[in-house]
Amino acid sequence: MSAISIHPTDAALGAIIEGVDLSRVPNAGTIDTIESALEKHGVLIFPDQRISPAEQVAFSRALGPLEATANIDARLNGQPEIFVIGNTGVRPVSFAPQHGSEDLEWHTDHIHKPVPARASLLYGKEIPDTGGDTLFACLYSAYDALSPADKSKYETLEAVHSIEGLRAYLHKQAGEKGYEPGRQEAMPECVKWPLVRRHPTTGRRGLYFGAKVTVGITGWPREEGLRFISELTEHTTQPAFVYRHVWRKNDAVLWDNRRVLHAATPFDMSRQRRLMHRTTLRETTPIA
Ligand code: SIN
Image (cartoon, rainbow, N blue to C red):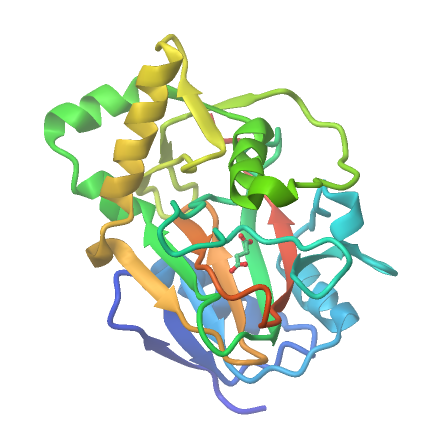
């Protein structure tokens, strides 16, 4: 097996990893290298991977326990740990807005669930000619750039997260065509986490929220909370904190949901196909 090499991007996040074959279950040394690169860079890009759904699941499971999507209809037949994202099936699943002028749906996976996601691995099977990129924003950089007064204030805040926030966004996106969420696993109406979260392995502080899935701040009037989240999104996603991944077929990208927000960009859904397979690693450390 060739040696693993790690090539950081020029952005605040991200490194390209060469020498790891995702079709094989990684040994302990490879897992250590991947985990420490993930800690350091937040987003890891593994180009040109040829993996079956079962291989993606086996590789991901070697990194930790997996969680199936709550969207039952978006689970791959026979391999329910794979979340099928794209517009190639009967019911499209996409977190990207339909038009470039719309807000992006910046989020961190499963923040609205009692056990959020630690990391996610997305594999690009069909890629549109233009658009359909994935953007990643660094939550450490966003926290570090706050004024001392804002840091102290934000440390005391608790944010409220709900799938309803995401559904409201998707309804708006779908317009007259409507939005059909498909069959969903039951989940609580909302969950609450501290707005500032300390990463359990690096010890660094980062903001912890999503642009649409976060629906308020505990104890604040609703509109004030929404306005605050919108301002926080703008602050967090400024270009200096963002890595843009322009997909090539067979790229696999692993990210740390404790450290990054991500968002998909629009593509022409009426003419282009986009098909991605995601595995989601369950959080293993309590947040509060
Ligand atoms: C996701 O939000 O997990 C998927 C992002 C993408 O479709 O690029």
